[in-house]
Length: 265
Image (tube, rainbow, N blue to C red; front, side, top):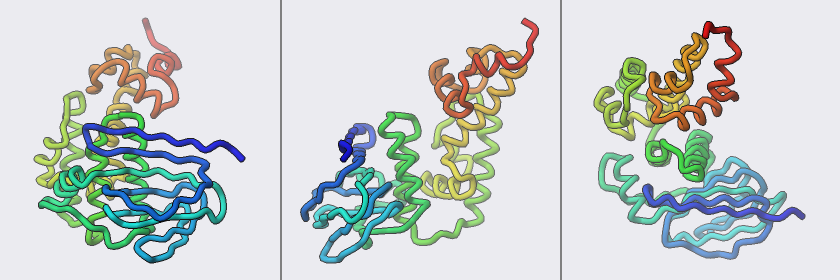
C-alpha cells in the first residue's frame, strides 16, 4: 500500500487554508469544525454521513460543511484523493458578502453537490493558493458566486459587460489592469462580472488577460523582439513572471521560442 501524502497551506491575504490529501485510506470518525469546509473528491469512493444523512461520494462530488456540521466517512473503494478549503466565519462573511453584494454569512443547505462548474472553480482556486499565484482573490469570489447563485441564466447585460471588459483588456494590454477597472468598464459588480465572464469565456478575467498577453508576446518574439522587450510591451511585471507564464502556456521559454524563427540580428 502506497504512502499517503498530506499538504496544507495558509493564505493570509484571503484568510483561508488549502489542504490536499492523496492516497488516504483511513476512516474519519464523526466530527465537526468551527469553520466552513469546501471540498472536492478527486479519486476514491467513500460512505459519508453528515447531519444524520448518508451519502456515497465519488470523484467530482463537492462537499460543503457549515460550521458545526457533524460529518464522518469510511472507505468504500480506492484510496481517497481530496482537496479542500477551510474558511473561517469572519473570512466567509467578508468574501461571501462581496460575492453576493450584500452582508451575508451563508448556511449551505446541501452538503453534497454535483456541480462541474463550481468543481472547476474550486480546483483552480486551490492550485492558485498552493502556488501562491496571482488571481486568487477573483478565483475565490468566482467560486463563492457560483455556490451562492440562484440560477444559471446569464443576463444579457452580463454578456455586454463581458464584451466591454474584453475590449478594454485588448486596448490596454501593456498597462496594469485591475479588476476594479474592468468592473467600471463593464458596469457590473465584481461577483457578477466574474460569474458572467467565466460562463462566456471559460476562464477568469485574469487568465483571459494573461492569454492575450502571451499571444501578443508570441507575435513579437516571432518578429525578432528580445524577450525582455516583449515582456515590457505586453504588460508583464518582470522578466521572471513573463518567462514562467510563457513557458506554462507554450511549453518553451521565450528565448527558445524566439530562436525557432529566422531573424536578422
